[in-house]
Amino acid sequence: MAKRIIIAGGGTGGHIFPAIAIANALKEKDKDIDILFVGAKGKMEMEKVPQAGYRIEGLDIAGFNRSSLIKNIGLPFKIIKSFFQVRNIINGFKPDAVIGVGGYSSFPALRFAQTKGIPTFIHEANSFGGKANIQLSKRASRVFTGSDGMEQFFPGEKILVTGNPVRKSILANSVSKEEGLQFFGLSSDKKTILVTGGSLGAKSINEAIAAGIDAFEKNDMQLIWQTGKPFAEQAKKMAEGKKGIWTNDFITKMEYAFAAADVVISRAGAMSVAELCVVKQAVVFVPYPFAAEDHQTVNARRLTEKGAALMVKDSEAKDKLVTTAIDLALDENERLQLKNNISRLAITDADEVVADEVLKVIRKQ
Image 1 (tube, rainbow, N blue to C red):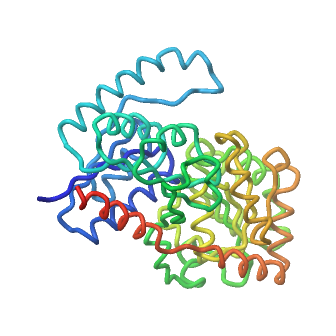
Image 2 (image 1 turned 180 degrees about the vertical axis):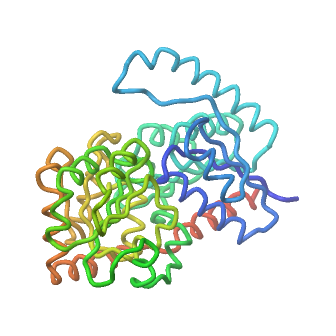
């Protein structure tokens, strides 16, 4: 009889793309496997998961809003409602296992599965264990981690260091620099800086680029600028009449952007870090300072300590980011050194290791 697996989580590309990579690896190893995603209504996963060819059920759930306490009034009701929704989904689908990849929908799905005695698996992408995952790990079958040294958060005997699953389009990237530049309509005789604040954009990075926009042209450099939706219109207006600037709210073919770039400016979410290791890029990280337990700074510091990346604090981005990126683009030796060091940290089979371990456990049932 075909095995059934629920993959729960989302909210950002950093949770969704690894989840899809794991689903694809499970399908490759067992084509009859039935996979259902559980996400949060109104979040990215409700669009991205069906595009990848999988079914998804949405929960009415949201996280704690730190910037506006008034918006948290309905939160307890949403959490209670999400548990009822999860109960209906799990009782109806009858999964053999539930995998949590982080994000709002991950906790209720795994918690309910654990009360039913269904094997649960956690993937903790960051270098710092999230509170929900720490709680869930006590009853999980396995905890897959993106990095080593996670025994301070999770039971040591349950940890399997797998690295972070990277999208196949990035792993199998055979796009040449020339093809990448052509894709964005840019010149092959200028240095190119790629700016990405992640799938949802990054306010401080966008504001820093906007403040220093003229410096790129002055230094004969080009820009590929992924802004996220909130800053998209403003960036398009700023780019009007300027040569060598491509801007949009989202880059659908990230492999072309990585191929075109000489330097990348990026947040330090676990998936961004994993992808940049695989594509061997010279990176300036700007960690998001309000991520839970400041885990993005922890992620970035792991690389800077190994001479594999540069880091600019979010609070200093407006003053330092553009000059740091331009200086790096002009310094051939430093770029080469960073690329060599970051390439040593690349992991390319995380999705398969996770899939193998999940299948091993559920086949014993």
